[in-house]
Image 1 (cartoon, rainbow, N blue to C red):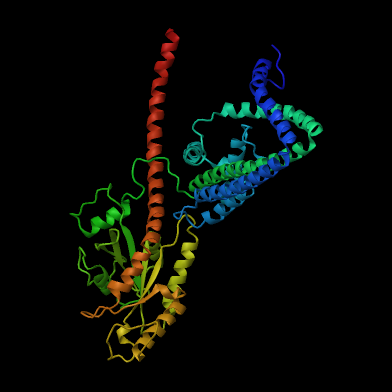
Image 2: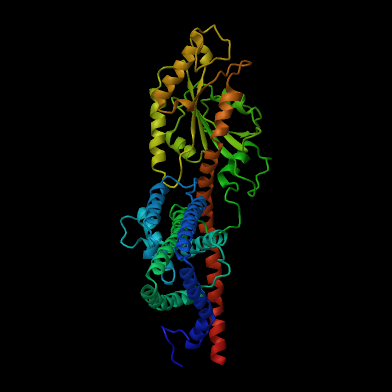
Length: 520
């Protein structure tokens, strides 16, 4: 049977007309009655007032929905390395420039095209010299990006779009076809209405325009949010992939203990429990010049050590580990080191240790103005960290030790108000802190003055400890990326071993399969 209006069943159309005809007749007769009674103008004014109030309410709802959708927006991951910042800025720019008119949802090809556009945006940041950067992806990682982005987008759609769990995709296509056909019929009705009753037609057109504008704004806002959320989800996991954060296996926690920390703990105590399943400790590296008070700082700050803390600072062992145990801080390992001006100091080993550090404490004596060696060592570390694109540099705190030796040397009566010095000692400590911050190129609030004199420890348990706790979250992000690199290295070997074993089993079965086929 032939159909009308691009696929509409004529019997369904007739049934619809029979259903709405009484209501249309009632509307027409009601308009005639209002005109006869002289109430038509009053009715028009009431309709315009109600329409204006409804439009205003719709605008408020659009703003409220815009705020709610903005709160549901995907945010960048603070655990990403520095190389991800530019990629995320490009993803944000792509999402901002995306318009609903360019990506109609009723066309099914938008999801692949827009997802590919987001992937290419990220890929070009990491492979700018490659003509087709998407080809640098492996198949399992590509599938994992799609899986993660689809999972998050499904959750956001279910939580933020009304009736999304009931509205079928086929219904959207049918609604679009009915909408196009209904608009053709409605245009004929509007033309006839303009001839019969021009005043009523003008009022109706004004009301329809305001109504459609308010609803179209809400619809476009939801459509725009959906497209931008999709771009950000795909871009988010693409950055995870290209920055090295996306791993294929989820069998162990990301921060499980690494082989290096296990070896360090075993080196400290051969009887220590070093099972791999435990959490990776924070690795805190204590650096500075000779006789600056590095070992004394470890004693003053952490207290509970599994080995003696009064170790010679210039021993032949580059790094001496100690276990850290203090409430409020994640379990950790503290590494004492030779002075940067010592004959035992090795810059290459320092870089290796700094790469595996989650927090660095630099001890600088406040009574030593010659800090050129310290600045050179710190600048070398900064250059090294700038080359580690898959990592974030660990937070650095400078401990200004030996403040009790500043002039007047015999005067030591803490506490001292460094913000508003009341005496010469406080003024000299404040000046030393500013000088150290300037000489070592660190923020002044990252320099903490302390006294490590026996039985006269000052400013360690309060100011320095608070500074370490304030930077613990940043240190944990550094630890995450460090563990991630270790996990990916292990994962590659585990997957290769598994793939080789499975391939060998498959090859072994080939002769048996061929023999069965020959017999069949």
